[in-house]
Length: 329
Image (cartoon, rainbow, N blue to C red; front, top):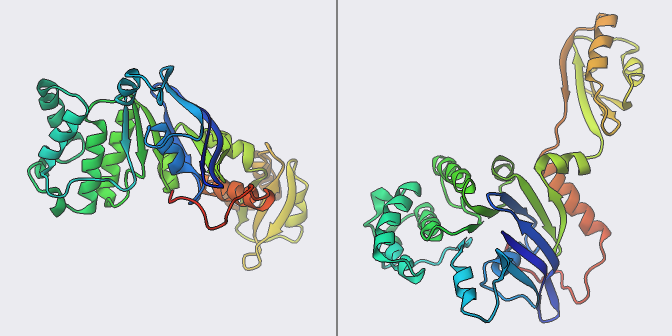
C-alpha cells in the first residue's frame, strides 16, 4: 500500500534518517518505537508528504508521493495524518473546523454532511460539536485532530501519539477506534506507550540513530531478541539439595536462589527450552510442595531497552552527528 524506498533526510551535516525502507500492507496496523531523536517523526513527515527526503522515494499504491505531477495531489489525499502537536484554529467551532477541513480535502457538500456526523460520533465529539475549539481541553482537541485526519476516509492513516493528553476512559475509546480503523485502513502508529503497541499493532518497527534496528511482531521480537528464558520456581519450604537438583534439570543453565526467600529460585534456561514440566515432575518425586512455577515473558519494554541500549553502546557515531542534535519524536 505505502512504501518507503531508501529514505534519507539530512539537516546540514546531521543525518536524521539514514536509508530507511519499509512497506505497509493494506489493513495492517504497524507501530513505530524509538527514543527521542531516533528519526521517527522525521520519517513520518516524509511518509505523509510534509517533508521531502534528501534522497529516496515514497510511493502509495505504486504512485510517487513527491512526483511533480497533478497526480501527486490525488495521492496525498489518500493519506490522513494526526501529528503529535495538532495545529487547530482555536477561534473556530468544532463542526465549523471539520467542515473547513472537508473543503480543503476536496469533499463535496453531500459527502461532508454524511461524514461529519460519522466522525463526530466515532471520535466522541458530538456533545461539543458547536463548542469553540480554544475552550476545549487538550484531550478534546486531540480528538478534533483525529476527526480531521479521518474525515476524508483516507486509505492510509498515520497517527503520531494519538492518545496523548487523554484520560483513561478516553484512551480506551480511542484504542477501540484505532482497532476499528485498522480493519479498513492501513495504519501507522507512533507512540511512547509500549503496552499500546502490544495491544494494537501486528508489527513493530524499532528506530534508533535514524535507522530501523528491528522489525517484526511483538512475539517475533521476543523470540529473536530476548535470549535466555527465565523460570521462577518457589516451594513451600527449602531442602538441603534443592538448588543442586534444580540445576540438573534438562534445559536449566544456571540457578539463583533469592537471598531473603530460601525456597525461591530463578532458573536461567537455554534458548527455546521450557523446563516447567520437568520441574513439576521433580517436585512430585521429591515431595516438594510447589507454591509458584512461572516462565518470565519478556515485555516489549524489555526488548526495546535492550535493543536501543545495545545499539547505542556498540555503534560508532555517524559522521557529522552531534549528540545534541535530533528531533522531538
